[in-house]
Image 1 (tube, helix red, strand yellow):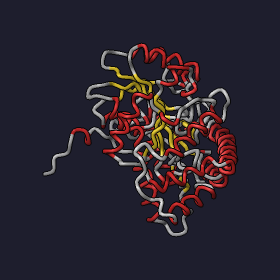
Image 2 (cartoon, helix red, strand yellow; image 1 turned 45 degrees about the vertical axis):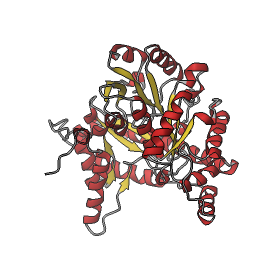
Image 3 (spheres, one colour; image 1 turned 90 degrees about the vertical axis):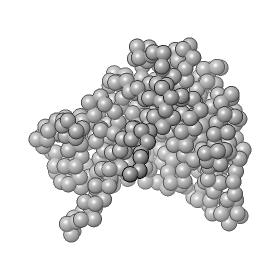
Image 4 (cartoon, helix red, strand yellow; image 1 turned 120 degrees about the vertical axis):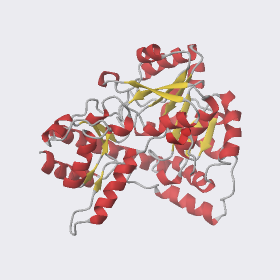
Length: 407
């Protein structure tokens, strides 16, 4: 019998994918003539890479630019990202601090392997994106989930971090804007939190992969814009997947304190060699003026989808306790819908509540959503996550179907 490592056994299923798998099976089984499923469960933009990016990929392929790049990534791409931080966020981020990675997933893995020892604890908000805590676990650490509230915008607060800090604590990992809530930590609160962490000799890692999709001026700021040592000591994770609409290209980046760059470079050389050369050459075109203008048009469309969808959820009794200020998610309290359909509020095995509701909506409305089970331990059975990354037409159809079941 094959022995499975404890490390692998600690990793829970990614329930959003389990729900998607069940939806695909149900769709294939029919019945004949049934309307197609509407998938509001996975956070993937319906847009693909814009024309200049596609043309750059074709040109790179035609010109044979498919060989290994440096482990840190193409110098030109690192420089373009540095310029983007200056232009978009008024953050001075030297290209020398930027490491190109095989998606944000590789960025998180490299950061955790460089900084987390066995037994270290990393504080994270509950709810939060499940894969992030598993990167901590895979490095031998332990993610400690701190329950959050709507009043905290579902993010870590200085007070909660101070209370939870203990000798084994290594630092914090948060996301702004966040998956699943679409909410950001206020810049002043992050500054206070980061100052405390630095004072304890800890690390602050922040997932900013949705930062380009911020809709409110007060929150659309990179943590890297903090002055002096504060900004230089932040570890930021970012990606070409969301704002730049390149999900399957698997390209991301890390911004590191200068002393960490050669450490992560050694790890990247051994674990990944480099990120996709083709994706890197294509990504250079993301920063052309025409591409950036297109991304801003698309950002406006994502905001319009949010502004349409949130009132409709409220009308259907699916209360969103904090208005998302970024990304393309709505984290809705589904308690009234669960009660209306007569579903059990909870079960010992973690199902019931929003889990049962997600399957009921899949079967009765043919709308696929994500139950809160993936995102933490703080009352997840109450919540559903909706993705508004789909087209306005799809969202309108989904509302009509949900109303037929919940109205």
